[in-house]
Image 1 (spheres, rainbow, N blue to C red):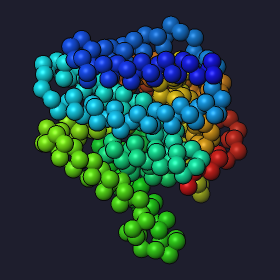
Image 2: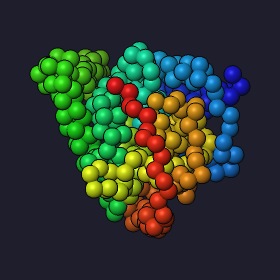
Image 3: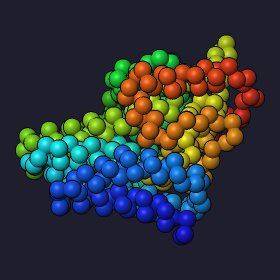
Length: 351
């Protein structure tokens, strides 16, 4: 239980500040943004890098509890953004809520879609659906994990590719490649590709229902606020992929690509970001063991590490010249490093 307390403190504060901004306005509109954009990055670079991890049961309860507050908190944020108020306050709350849903809730949904059990996977799927990003439920395990660090993966940034160019390519590519995966699954089961059991009906239809609910509740202002918030949250998910796989490439062995290894993901050990994102920056281990819970992920000695914490690197990614200045020497050095013996094939992905 003691190991769970830092997660509860960091995540609980993030939720509380977002609620405070919606209820009390004023300076509280800025408090959540200051916490997630500045304080977290500062704490990452002064606190110890590793702490005790919760046990599997506590970790499972944490992900379920965080999923339970998703819809009420999303509705509260949309309601707040659909209202009127000073534009600096609106922008601050918009940025803070986009960071929360794009970094924290996305990380939780990511954890849930990899989890065992239909209920937890369904919770992750519906978090993505309500963020108008339902196809991530298929595209992440079915495309990204299979093709990571190859040209076939739309979510692996190419060497020299800017974040702004990557963002559209990754969203567009993951949607259509995920759809191809699901249609192929239906055909393997003797059904038409667009059979009603194809989950893309849920991804698209569920998103449409959410938009309709926002319109009925808050009118066009609600629809605009909801779409804007979802787009910002989606961009946060994609920029994390950009940072954690930038410039990575698996070698072509003649008939197939080399197995996924530690050298195909960037990692970051910083404490507070790992608490908030459920160890998403321990990325090499996640790709090697996608069904392993966040509490069990580690950063191996041979895993490439980012020079700064994830929030700092995400900020760098918005400025292509500065990003290349920071990352290209590290990508080049990694490419020149002799390859270690490939590990055993990674664990199978969740169905």
